[in-house]
Image (cartoon, rainbow, N blue to C red; front, side):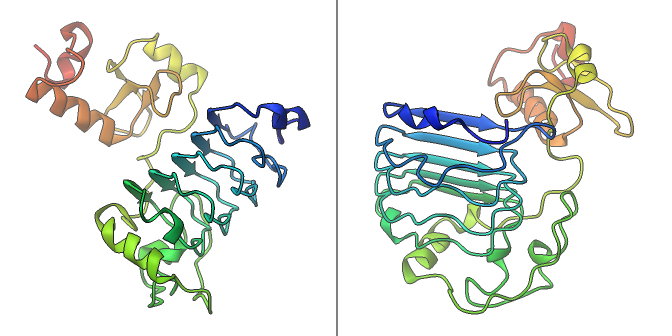
Length: 255
């Protein structure tokens, strides 16, 4: 599905929108007036649409509280946040081509969480004041191969945007994603190994260990990402989270 049908605009009472693409099937365009009459929409998650170049206007999203955008590799700018004064959560992940942010001043009074993981060239291209092309965030992306960034001229961050970046500095402009640390879309063979069982050991060629895991609302499949494995080991060692099952999790320390 490369675009949403026109009748999608009729969902004026829509509250929750989650669309995640896969390599062979993802969005390539969205109508600019898609959200014009969706004041009830409170949650948007758009991820895995690498060929989507532009997002619709956000002006009609007066009730939006949470926005997550991930792996929209062709996107260079975001729509204005001028009418998003209900926003509480903003997450940008693997937005490798994003060169600048809109003015965040309209959400400064309501934003409770602002997370930026992986590359966003606005972190180092001068948008925040100083251009440093030696920063890994501006280098060629090691996974997506997004090209080296260039220094931005003009349109630097507003005082309100700078204040929010500083406020959430522990969660913004962090390290670049490395190969093997992102779950790709589940494969038939990866799901077959797991047979619907979380945390059991599985095998991914070329990696020392792998685990059955469900990431981002996807099916339970084999992943070599070390972070979920480390997380589950810590949960087991500290006795938190879902109780472990030694039949499948002895390799993680479950007894």
